[in-house]
Image: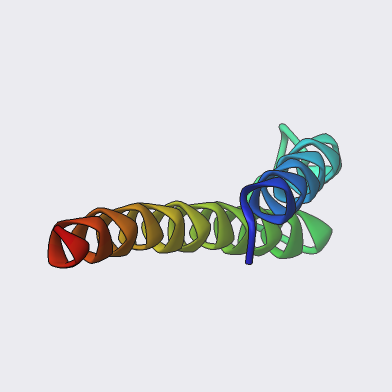
Length: 70
C-alpha cells in the first residue's frame, strides 16, 4: 500500500465520521439510530488508527532495510 492510498482511505474515514456525526441526535445520543452512528464513528476512528500504525511500521521497515544495505 502506498502513501496515496493510505491518505485516500483516511480521507474516506474522515468523511464517514462527519456523516455519522450528523446522524447523532442531541436529545437521545444513545438510542436508536444515534447508537449506530456512534458505532460508525468509533469504527472509522479505529480504521484511521490502524492505517497510521501501518504507515509508521512501513516507515520503520524502510529505515531498517536502508541500514541493512549499508
